[in-house]
Length: 265
Image (cartoon, rainbow, N blue to C red; front, side, top):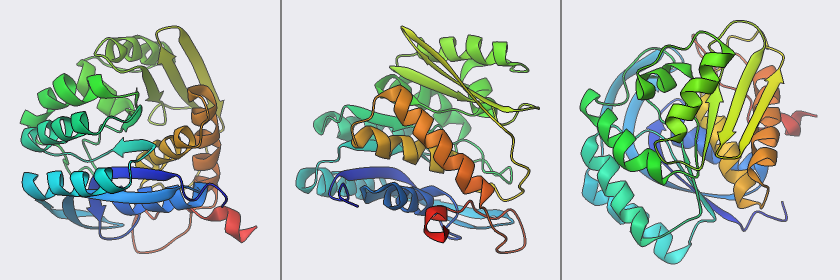
């Protein structure tokens, strides 16, 4: 843990069951070896069976959290996850303008694993107009990419086309996550002069709660540690694959991945 003093920040919602959101982000930061900090945007009442309620925090306390962290411990990389309203999105973007960070990872969280909407319909435009253009990398899964682009994705070729459309919104890179397609898991990393395909076996495990949060946080950590974008995504793909492989049953629904699987070896 020689790099544990390298600070990373997550701006996202809390998952009371610990499998996704802020809790998954902080576990991932720790597992990879960076110092994790958090700004909480919303509190969810959820467990392995689903989300039952969401309470957004006020813009004031969100802005104060960002100020408190960034003025004292400037993060090397920042991940933004659940941001549910237009006001929260705009306030986060305005706050981050005051505290520039080269590596901003945007995970456009829209719907929970159980189908609960985590982004207000009126917030989608703000996400596209204000937050995504600021991203170093944006990491949508297929349903999220379809929502952002208003295009249907059925194949890897569709992923490539939609990825280009999202890239045109302003981020430096787009990681299109293909876990919702049939067959092997294929992710596509797209940049202005970059096109990289990451392919791995599909692991037959039901416990995949928090996978999107985990891989985006892993990318955040690896960027903070100094890896380039391709290596950051590659190492993060390897990490989430093994975390899924070692996932475990807890609760009565879709359990979490194992963030600390290396400790079991």
